[in-house]
Image 1 (spheres, rainbow, N blue to C red):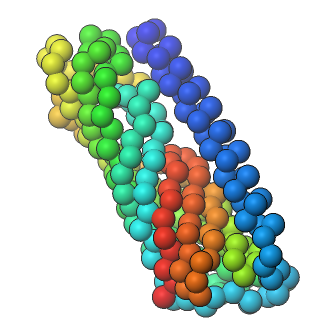
Image 2: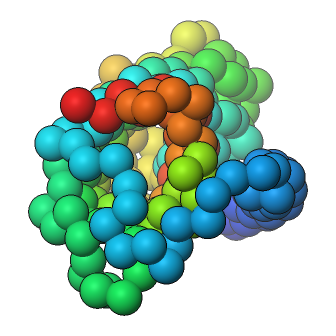
Length: 220
């Protein structure tokens, strides 16, 4: 169990380093785009696109440490639908709105097992997240808007391995068997940016726990 804890801490450190690096890149991109010529809108209350729903298919890069692979990243696809609850507000003196967002994200992992008797054998699995979040949009210019998202997500994970010993193992307090699954509820947080490339179409980036999402937003 001591080895597993060391490996888990090592995986967590690597994940945190990746996340810090991605934050630096995202902030740099935001800075460059925000500095391009655009009409400032943050003080123009209500001066943003009015829409009934925002649909956003996206790519998923997930680095959250699951209890069976502490050193692997997963890639996949997802979809988000956001419905404005307040077109203007909750702060009445700036250009903002509040939406509720529903999503479905899938990531696939394929790596070498890194725990106990299974170390070095092939592990694979899938992670499905179903988040429900509050999305608070701040419209800085006619091109750039920023938003935090905070909420809860159902997380369903499956795992299987090829080769190695048969049987089950306890990892981070969870009893895992070949072909097994685990379902839980997690707190999720993303910080996002939306860059409009047309009147109702934009590029959206989200960075947070547990993933980086990059997609296309369509305002309907």
